[in-house]
Length: 423
Image 1 (cartoon, rainbow, N blue to C red):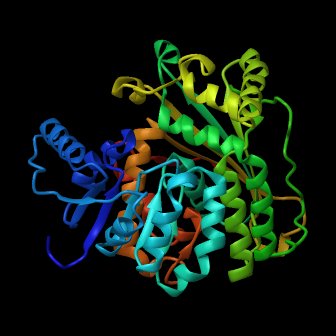
Image 2 (image 1 turned 60 degrees about the horizontal axis):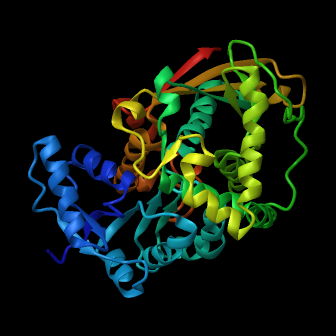
Image 3 (image 1 turned 90 degrees about the vertical axis):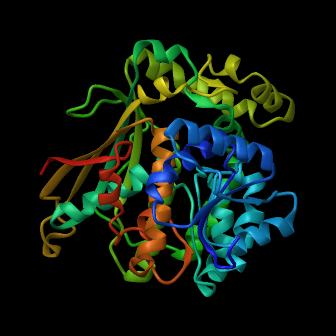
C-alpha cells in the first residue's frame, strides 16, 4: 500500500450493516481512496467478492487492513493510515472507545452509526477537548439515528424565515402487511439496544452532568414547550402518538446548549413522539417495551433477551436480519411542527408563525443508514472548512449545519426527501 494516507477506511466491513456501507461506498466515495478493515482477512475478501459480483465490479484491489479491537496496536495503526475512519463495529459502548481514542490521537476523523447515548456522552467527555487540539471531528449517530431528525431541525430553521421557539417532531412508519411478521432488525441492533436499556440510568446521569458543564442553566424560554406524556393525536396525521426516549432528542438538546454557549443563539425547544397505527398498539406496545427495559437490568434476564431475540420481539429481531425486500418496504416520515416569530422584536409574545416540514425515506435502519454514514464521511472530507471549529465531538446538526449535507441526502435514491408542507 502507498505510504500516502487513504481518504477513508470502513472498519467492521463484514458486519450486516458494514457490507451495505461497502456496497454503497463504490458510488458515494467514487474518486476517493478508501479501504476496508476488520479482524478476518478471508471474510473481508469474501465480502468484497460477493459485493463485486452483485454490482459487477472488480473489488480485488481494494486495500485491506487487519485490525482487531482487542489488539490496541492494530487499531492505532489503522487509524494512522487514513484521514477518516467509518466505524461500523458495535456495540460501540463495548468496542468503540479504543477506536475513537486511536483516531483522535492520530488526528483522524471518526464517524459511526451509534445510537447508544452512554457511548456518545462518554466520547464527548473524554475526547472533545483533545479532538479540537488534534483537528479531528468525531460525529456519532450518523445513520437514521439521528441524521433524519437532526438535519430536519436544521432544514426547519433554514426555511422558517424568523426565530424558531419550539419544534414538535412526529415519527411515523409504514410497512407492507406481510413484513410485520418478519425480521425488521438484525441481532447486532438488538444487542446495542439491550445494552442501552441496561445503562439507561447511568447514561441519563452523565448526560445531565455534561449538559450542566456546557451551560449550567439555559435562559427561561417562553412560551414553554411542554412534553405531552399521554397518547394523543395531532392535526394532519393519522397515528396515535407517545413520547419515546430517542437519541436524536438528547443530541438536539445538546446542540442547542452548545450553540447558546458558543454563539449566544436562542435555544430551540424540541420534543419528539413516535406514532402507532391504532389505539390498541399505542396502549400495548409501551408496556412490552417497558418489560424489555426492566429485563435488561439483571444479568440472567438480559442473557435471556440476547439468547432468544425472536421470542421477546415477536420475530422482529433475528440473527439473519431483514431481507432486502423487507427493508425496502419499510417507509418512514418525520413531521416537524415549528412555532416562532417573524421578527426578533416579537420574541416572548405569543408565536405569530408556524410551519410544518416533513422528512421522509425508506429502509431507515440499514439502507438509508449506510448512505447517510457515507455522505457524512464525504462531507467531512470535502467541506470540513464549513464545519464548527477545526475539530471536536459534535452532534451532527451542529457539525453539518453549514454544509450541503441536506442537498446531498436528497440526491441519493435511498437518501431523504425534505419538504415544507405548510408555511
